[in-house]
Length: 333
Image (cartoon, rainbow, N blue to C red):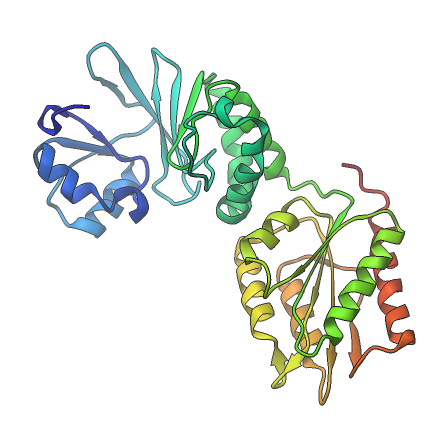
């Protein structure tokens, strides 16, 4: 498209290595002395990554860069999702380069939202749930900040996925809704099982939830990716976690998932633990402790069943599902 040596400016909106890792080769091609504009935190991060080999220029919200027929302005968006994150705005065209915000983990021949249609929204939700969820309070403030600044972008260009040109407000409105983390009448049952006893418990709990007309997803961790489970949990009002006890601890896939979920800090959810055991039953206490650490509302002290659940045990599981379902009854979508 252009002789690299004709490039006069480089803008670094984000310094995470999937954004900045190619900078040394790029600057080698266009000239080491060319300016690289970044946020103040970006200046620090790029220096940490690459030393002082680049002509870094820190910008802020009061900076306006004239590049000829267009001017660029900048907006710091700290912790969306790194401290250095910023937006770049092309003022004359109302184009917003949004770094990681408003992106998707999506790759295809389509380059714009109108080429994909509504099918892009689940990808955007999954991206938000697994990348930006822990920063939801900051995202909510950022949405207000964008509105107060009078930004009304005609095109939003994230660094991942398709560009939003048909209806950019659609993804902004979705972010506002996701950042609020308003629960819905939906439950997600996430579990793994060693000898199928915990699976039987999970299925009975699901039956109880369905009995209360609750939308329910049941997800066995060895058959799905943890990012898909978090995506389902994102808009749910309740999450139930099940694990057998293994070596006085949790089943490894469940332990992995709880660590991942804890880091993403979901809010406004009911929660409960369940599981089977043979010798001892520590898994319930361990799951419950993690759910408490996440500040989720425990709806039950946890359901533990010795060996294989009999009819009475399955009835208890069914009733746990109904109990959670009744607690969700007042939640509207």
